[in-house]
Amino acid sequence: DREVALQMLPSAEEDARARAGPITIAQVRWRHADPELPAPALTAELPPLRVTDLSLVIDEGDNAPLPLRDATLLLPAYRLRFFRDGHTPLTLLYGRSDLGPPRYDLALLAPRLLGAPAQDVAADAERGPMNVTGVTPTIVFWCALALAVLALLVLIARLLRPGGAPATPPPSSSASPAARE
Image (cartoon, rainbow, N blue to C red; front, side, top):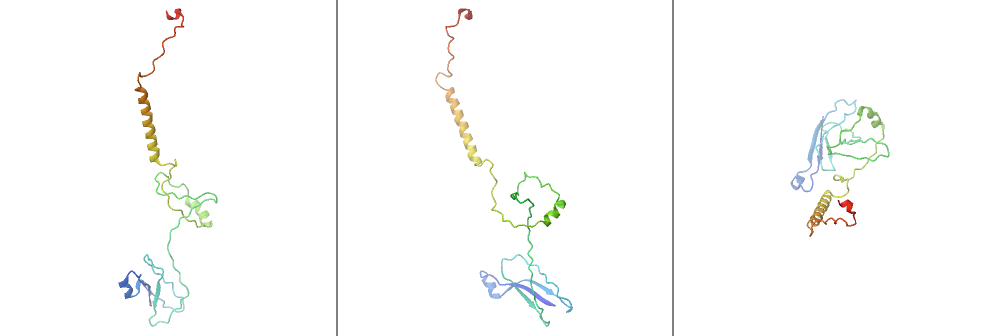
């Protein structure tokens, strides 16, 4: 049995802890009893860390030292995989309740998705909601309100003009006397 510890040095801000020495993050027991078989893989789960350097400390005890050949660090990550033809731009929409769910059968697309080569793309910065008109809605509101007020003022000014509405012209005297009767 061997005791294996993953340690980190504390940051300079943690002055009191820095004098105490390295901090043990994870500690596991590595057991390898049969020398005829290769040593089993060592797996340790780590908490989220903000350091770039870790030390692997193996306490061999009275055992012969194990030769360490290579180490593998597995970092779980989540990725989105988009499926498109080569000419269609990618768009990621989220947080919009007015959009319906996608309509496709993943079981039918899985062989094509898994067999297609993946390309890394970088996402742009998040943008606010898109404005279809291209102008700010508050500007449109205030302009429409100003036009309505101006139209009402013109209408009121015409109604309050001295003499009111223009009088209709009197009938012309050129009409025939038979038409007047």
